[in-house]
Image (cartoon, rainbow, N blue to C red; front, top):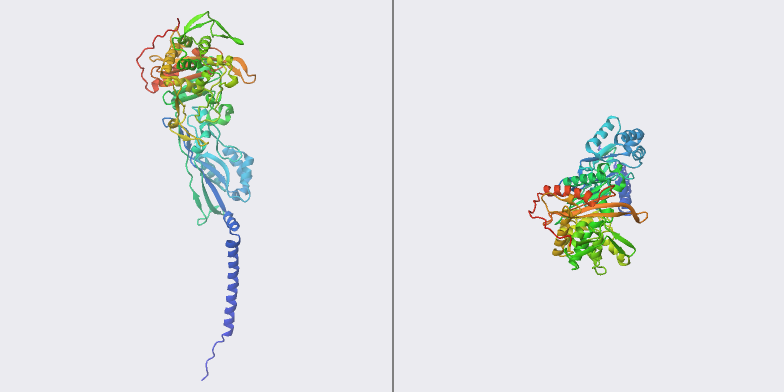
Length: 588
């Protein structure tokens, strides 16, 4: 019987050894590569891996709304979209696609063409803040036309529902051509940009062949939406103030002007109108000089409205009372030039109340001779002249309140009746409101509650400061003198009366300075400031018209004040006090 033959094992073992050797070599190569990637230079290789096909998309925060005191939106963020392109998919047909997009979106052809062709990029902005329906239609139509590589992303669109109403205060967002990013360019939008804007988020994902890789490195950092900014403005009252102001300027042949409505107790600005203004929905078409609130940025000499501050200071300092007797000549010769009144007259015997009622420059100068050196200036500074109101808008002027060697006796005379100093309209409103508020000045506010400016300061009605400037008795006497201004046959502004209400006010007419020569150019600024009800004030209103061709503070500013005050009292349901204007002796 033949014994079976066993298989030969040597060749099999040799093949196994060779196989294990090959595997060991391959594993060694992988191990070396792993050491290189994670040990020798992990950062650069990780960046290369992440960058290849990686797309980072900004997730825009929804900007906070700007609201009036009643919650009506003055600036609103609505649903919008951005259109973006993947140049890897758009480069081949970039010229045709750029033509299509420039026509549909009214954007620059050459800039669009450049973005559609960017090498080594998977994400380029084409257009920002497009109404959502329009953006989606454009992308859909592009796909129907055979174009690929376009998509939309969330991008809230800023709108201004009220157009010209408070435009110079609200401001607007622009879209500079260099990067397509919307930026705050004026008004509250600019001053409170950080507060309103919130913080954009970011989405990062990997892309291949134009599509997101489902299991790729996809991370999202959510956006933090901005906060709403509630203002003290009453949008309906603001609209009415702008209309009354425009009518007054046009009827008098004026060039520009301001109208301010202030809550006498809180300092909240219910209306802050400037003319001319603009529509912030079409801001690019407007003169850039109109972007700022002229009632804060444009200084002018206030004229005789300032006399009530001089009178209140005289009474508070114990130098006079409303009954003080003053002999008023037809011309007062002082230092380098004579001082005249606005009307020709012989020698008059007026009380201080008569000086205010008839707006006598000469009588005011003679009364102010009782001030000690620097005393009047200290009072005017306490009233807020020469300092910023701090309502929060950029570009506010501090005005001009002379001091030191600039305050000569001649300058002091002119300052006493409202020349040789400069104010802005809100500044002067707050000063007159000090009389309405019983002698206590309260900071004017444009923000209801509180909010944070871009410089980090918080402002608003919750943080408004107040300070006593004159005594309650001095404020009351000044109020009583101001009431005589609107009494027929006594004062110079009967047209400022409001039927059924006691009104206290003061006219102003001042020469205007030509900034080129630093001299008076022959034109004037006319105004009327006042409050009502005079014996329990609720609102202070100031109307200014620059360069009217006819009329003065009583005939131009007075009727405008009357319309605004009547509307405001009715709107807020303020009843008459039922008391009568007292008869005060204006002559002796």
